[in-house]
Length: 342
Image (tube, rainbow, N blue to C red; front, side, top):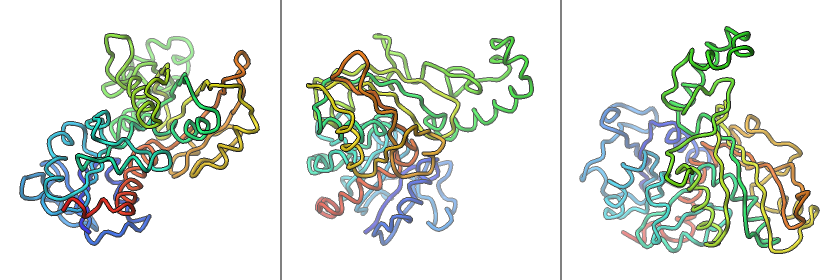
């Protein structure tokens, strides 16, 4: 089995390589692909990084993409034509009706509908919400969801992490300014990756703002949740916020159901769900580097007995991206998709 990893030198691509190795994925060869800037140099343990050309993309069984939407749109179908099943981590194919959008624990059977030979990985924020959302939907029947995210700098990739890491020591040098003149403090550093200064701050805008006042990141939370859960009429009210955390997304969710809910039954459903851990007060810092998703602060809503409030966290680079991509690849092998196209 030959596996291509496209975007192998990026933050998620590197974690993807480690995850394949850590989980003992049955590949005979794993070949790294990257941009022309990186192609040709040696990647320790994996050989020479390949460029994307008509010749180099032939003859793979699986191609795992984490190189951005434009690269996925340009090259995914070329890998498919060469015999591969493509698992794509960008937004390029997620809403295509012929491309399943899969969370391995939530809707694994959807992978069988990969009519284009492409399977999509959800947005990292949607991913974190889906495990508890599915567990509770199966128990009570979800009709609506208000989701407010607290997204890590790492959601913007390595550059997002680097920008926050640079800003923190600069602003930390003048605590008095942070307390007495925050506007001046915010202008002491530049922000090119995040919408505003992120260090010692919270930025309630990330993604591209649409005409309806919502960002594309917020619309992903609505549209992808509907597709993954098979609930096309699910009412979703999303707000996405960037917070000064390196890795680990957190989402506060108010989910509304068809009938009144019971907290004990909800906790039982959450504890029984695979790769979901119930804690009193989970935090994104403690979720960083962990495969599992963590949920806590589970409460029946004070004003609506049909609603539950809960707080969920997960590593946006692992389960939110690299890990689920590898889990989808494992599903493709288990369900006989790999090799079928060739």
